[in-house]
Image (cartoon, rainbow, N blue to C red; front, side, top):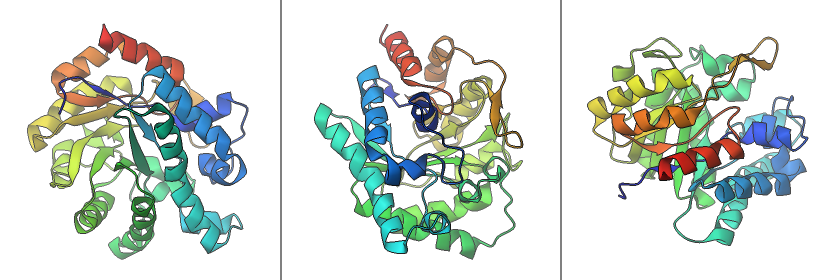
Length: 289
C-alpha cells in the first residue's frame, strides 16, 4: 500500500442538494438513481476532479424494501441498486488511473428514515438484519465495485451481522462506525466495536458521520485494536436535527485537523455530511502540501 493517504469523496446528498435537488423524501439521494442518474454521475465527477481517489456510490439509502415502499417494483429496485455501482464505475473509467469505486452500505436505520441510524438499537433480531443486508450486498457486489463501504454503523449488534456476511461473501470492505465521543451511537465502547470488524476481508476500520473533534482519538483506538489502516471521514462539524430535518451549528475546517488524523494512523481520509467538492479539494491540496 502506498504511504500516501487515500483521499475519499465527501457527502453525496449535500452535493446533490447544492445542484438544486430536493432530497426530503424517505429515499433521500437514492431517489435520483431512478429520477436523475446523470446528476449522481456529475457529483462523482466533481469529487474525482477535486482530488478524491474513491467514489462512494449512491446506495447508502438504497434497499429493495425502501424502493418498494416508494412504489418501485422489486425487479426495478434490484436494478437501481446495481446502477449505483455502474454509474460510479462509468465516471471512474473516464478518469482512469487507480481510482476506486466503493459501494455504500448504510445501516438498517437509514431505510427507516426516522433518525434511528444515529441511535441503533432498532429492536429487531439479527435474522431480520441479515435478511435486509444480505441480498443488498449481493446486488452491489454483482455490479462490480472495487470494495464495499460499510458505513455509519451505529451499533455493534448490526456490525456483527454485517461482518459475518462480508466474511461469507469474501469481498473486500472498509468498516466505519458512527460515533459519539469514545462510544458507538448505541453506547458501546469503541475498542469492542473495532475488534468486531477485525477480519481479513476488512481493509480499513474507522469512523464517519461524526464530529471532526472525535476523529483523532477514535483513529488511535482503531489502529491499536485492529492493526489495520484506519479510515476517517467525519461530517462538517454541523449537527443533524432529526426532528426538524435540518443541520445546525457551524462547520469546522478539516484541513486543520487532517494532519493529526494521519499522524494517528489514518490512511483513508475524506468527508461525510455537509462536506462538498470544494472541501475535498482543499483537503487534497493540504495533504499534498
